[in-house]
Length: 259
Image (cartoon, one colour):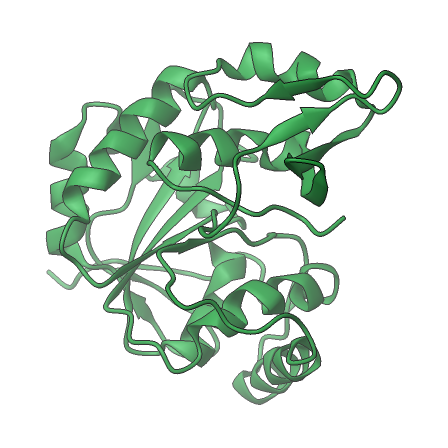
């Protein structure tokens, strides 16, 4: 029996359905991002948005441009579930994701290792059927690392225990592999949230529960400032908070949205 190929859910609506149009769009966003900061010396993970390409593409390009002139064997894609509520993390172990730029094949060996490392990673195919958060990464990935395989992971309820367990599982499963973790980025300072009104500082700890971290953002309004000593280095929002906590648990530091 042939390995299953997931059909693209939002091609033709969230991004162009033709290979030519999609490649041109991605290349245009990457070209515009060349005016950004210089490339990082090393790269283990990135954080990128997952809205429609016309909205997310100009921002995602600043992250994915870091893949230029790098070799990536496997990309682990971690994204939130927008349509299916469930406990744990859903994985697709075999097959691939269809895209206008070709099939992104699943690394079945790596996927099996991640699933074996923790019981919170399980088979729940329904979580992937309509989900766009991983699919929106593939145009950039196929353009910049076309030979890379993927491990697709959709997080259900994004609580601290799930984030910790997944971070530990990925840390062990990816050790020694030429891998990229999508959803998060490395090379940044510790995050200190600064209250806009009283200028008090609170550190976002790796083991902080999501329910405890959200009120910290509330003290600063809709988003919070990420500080390195007294230098403003980025923004923390409700949308990237769970991913930030996961990354911190994974033992890496992360820059966030530009302030």
